[in-house]
Image 1 (tube, rainbow, N blue to C red):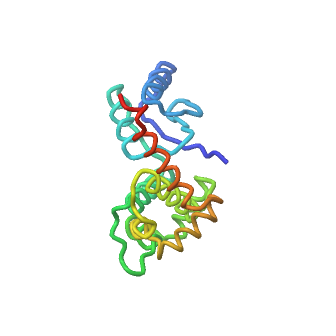
Image 2 (spheres, rainbow, N blue to C red):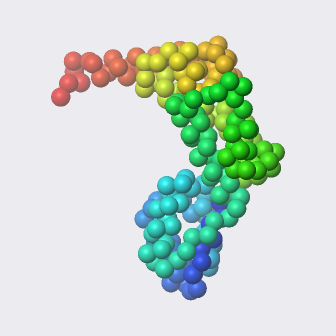
Length: 195
């Protein structure tokens, strides 16, 4: 289920304003579901850097970006997920993402979780699981780290736990992605591929 995200823009007063904003969004390659006076509906939530770029672009046109509270919360949660599951986070003992996000946003976790699920069409827990699995794939294919190292970096309790969750999510074994890495390496080291 696709969710739409509303961004409110102060200063849009005429059809020319709509055209100017539409052109700015097109230049920034932001997928738009609709534009009316004072409001843009995007197909996906924008990242912090995208919002900053949009804010600057709109300011040059004389508009001010106002953000819907729910959209802002979802973006902040996603940014926190990016930080925590980047591969360089120092996970403390008894780590709970729910405590990290509640503390960072100074809000009750169940409220954050409900808003996130409503906006994204998926539970926060499922989103995190999928995010971590994508990160595992990336690390398996592009690094030579062991499963235990990857498990440690991404906050899994063990390599075995990572393997089970990975298999449940993807239907594939982690070894499948190690094979992809070997294939890529073989291609880059093949004598016919030298320039």
